[in-house]
Length: 322
Image 1: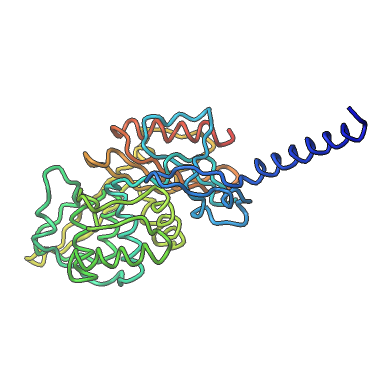
Image 2: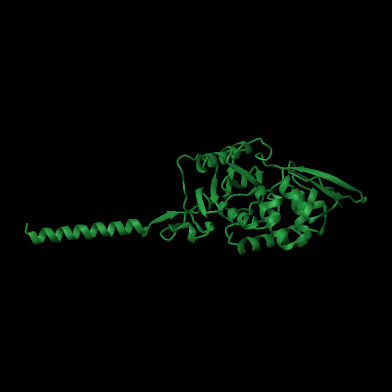
């Protein structure tokens, strides 16, 4: 073979190698399948997180071999101080949210309601399915929106959710419309809400990433942060007879109740739990580490409350500096 032919062949090989490196490096033409089995181009998704909001991360799962969330349908840990996602699994999968719905209920109530306004407990508030968590209201009770919100977020009172919805929008259905409008306005566009409490309805669903968007927006409000931070809260209601009575609500958060534990370097600042047969056990946490970095962590659809706390703790044990 002539020397010129050898040089030509080497040049061709070199150009082919360069072309392959460019293709692989840019992700050109690479496809993954999202949770609806629709192909989506990820070539523009691999960017610096400092230039994007976490809510825009798309359908990619960021896994860590040391984290075990095999029993959860969806899970994620977000560092919201540094705008980084540390772990994710099935964040765009459509799932039932159970009482984590109440995060959006509280967000909408704080935006559209007056904390001092008086709510009246209707028969619908107390006509709930057996076993539903309640604040203990009676028909005709009057309570301020502020007090009802503490019942909603501390003991996960479904009766409080309906009272809030009816007090602000006139009906559960009208309030659900407002919930959907507000969710869409902040970018949570893959959800649909039918009620303010999360008791099961077929068309009431969200995704983990939408729930993150809603929660991250809600915690910008200091009052919301306070609502989710109490281990116990005592509210006052006025009965039909005009007599006032106190109702004490205890948190559903096992970390606050010292029945589960995160690493010593992590402090839970607030949370919302949720459990139904269809949704499984769900948990949303706001926490911070010893460097005052804040985190939102979410786990959706585990078999039982014990499992949801085990898997939440696993994420923190393996991803947060001791």
